[in-house]
Length: 253
Ligand code: ATP
Image 1 (cartoon, rainbow, N blue to C red):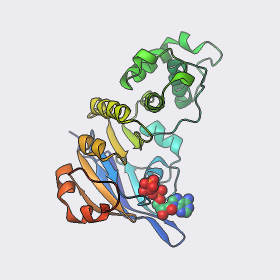
Image 2: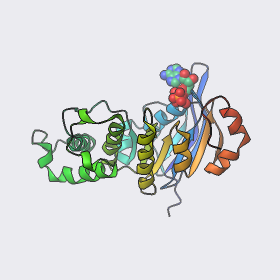
Image 3: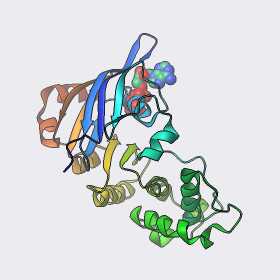
Image 4: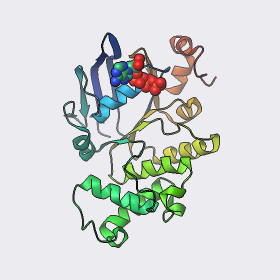
């Protein structure tokens, strides 16, 4: 196994006025690791993931991806290197099928048109990888359904398929279970479990059952600082973590 971390974050600082949204955050991710970031509301999780995706510019500190300094790179250039963020979809065509949308996402990622005006499903070089991504996201049985007809949980799975089709090395997952029913989030846990090891994943999530079921390691962010990093068992047993969580989401005992 390679010894170069997939992701190495050094002393990352983001200030909003007098507020330190990320306060000298230090973190590394091994290839294939699923690392979860948890923390109370306003702890800086979204700001941190924004700095990794490239949408938020840090005030100081560095982000190394696969040994390369990507701190100054914009999101699209990071995505081309395999650092991909799953977004709440805005650029989806509701009347097009799941598969067509994933093909279009791949076209957008590749940056060339592949003959945009040809019906997308006739382009074999695009369809095969899109079918694979749709299956990986657990939507093979819904491939030809218009996106407008998907349930909320299925739309989040579509977001995942649209990221997977770009063949990322590291997935940045920002609250993939948000707004899901218990049953839907259980399905996403299964899905992420099946992707574990194939991709490194950084997961920001409030659903503690999901986090503790999935993560190899967990880091706890409070007021912009990482107060603890460790295995789920270590985090569960950590007194500082338990104190930080009093009155917030319950940690699974
Ligand atoms: P939640 O769990 O509620 O999503 P979070 O851990 O993701 O919270 P962030 O959204 O990163 O936390 O916010 C961290 C802090 O930075 C908060 O106090 C927030 O109000 C502040 N903040 C975030 N973005 C901005 C901004 N663009 N301008 C000013 N303050 C901001």
